[in-house]
Amino acid sequence: MGSLLVVTDNKNGFTYRAICNEIGKSGNSIIEATFEEDRISDYLSEVTLVFAVLSDEFDAGSIFFTSFKKKYAESDKKIVFYGSSEKITDVKAAGINDKIAATFIRPIENEVLVSKLVKIMDLIENPDQKKTILVVDDSGPMLRTVMGWLENNYTVLLANSAKTALDAINRKKPDLMLLDYEMPIVSGPQLLQMLREDENTSDIPVIFLTARSDTDSVKAVLALRPQGYILKTTATAALVIDKIEQYFRQ
Image (tube, rainbow, N blue to C red; front, side, top):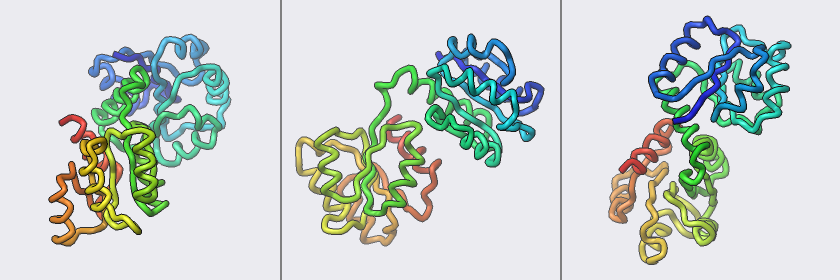
């Protein structure tokens, strides 16, 4: 079990109290504090992760938050922020982005939120367990989007062609590959066929992430026994992460 410093600008807020109660149910130890508390430095040395719950009145320019930032800068702890999109934007501009493990925008069910916090703590305490995912797509914007979805929970490798994908696999064999269908020179199905025919890569699990939804294309891909098929038109961060997590659980 991990330990968590939950810090806020409003300890009496309903959202803050409900989240703390849910963390308590998870079995992880918790220290509660406000940004202005004198013992922040001591607390930081005792915990695995810092979780900041921002109320609607939170001010990233306040003297209390500025004081917290100075003390936090001396720590090597990662931090997670939870609040409205406006407040998340404020803290991202506060100069500590290199230490932000994740940001979550309200509303999120408390059980889901705490589950995500526990996963982040597990990754911090057991860094060797972080899975590697290779994303192969000839679209730069799509690669960047998927990277943003996955980078908090996985080691993400990017490739914009079959050749760069094979080069990446030779350097480090991924635990899972997200593969586009339509790519120049060598298509996604052709790349998967190549992987299946090589004994060194035949066991790499592949989930297609593609815009191709016609029956013939889907049938052709399923014949190659991929581990999943996700349409880009319906893909969201939550859906893709859920599909990946389902595979690893299995």
